[in-house]
Image 1 (tube, rainbow, N blue to C red):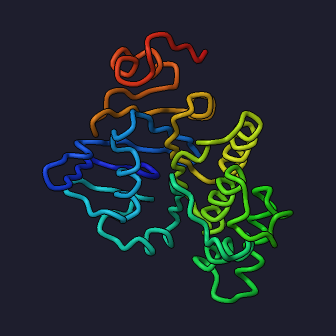
Image 2: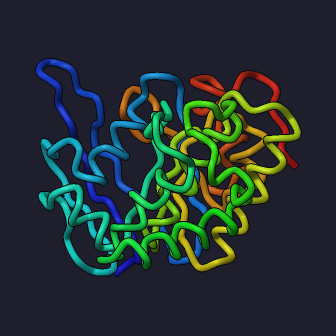
Length: 241
């Protein structure tokens, strides 16, 4: 049994078939990429994994245990964290309080949650902003706060949903460094990202989907060379070597 595996995921929204027969497995310690055009079903897959949407059909396994059908908070407690494409921090709370709220996933006291939050902020490079109101952060730091909040839940697996969108080149470099640092700290990562520089440089394997269906899987270069992926998503001339 793989560390994490989804089998034949299907999701219908009325007459719309948003996800249609998606299967993949992720090895422990791997960075696994998920790409596809807008509306192809990537975020829907994350919502299915984390219990935000019920499956129409399929199975999801984490560390050998079937988790589809569990409540979202139980999935988080098992060790699956996530970020959201549209970041919505607790705007009127400080950065520290935002991260403390996530740390209560594995804490039962304010003291312990504060300690875990401070450790996460230091690890993710936001300790110097801990007393700032979250609403005052620029987009780059809001994205980093989103990752920090997920990291503070104590995950074994993190689902990253377009955490590099809207970042400038310097911020992109820092985002790549943080994602690799989190992986090196023992956390497995599944990442959805439109910025090819990011996903192609850090992913060990990539699944490409279109109209909710798989169209290519393999190493970054294998996916970049896949004619169906090129036609649907990447464009005519792509070289990530």
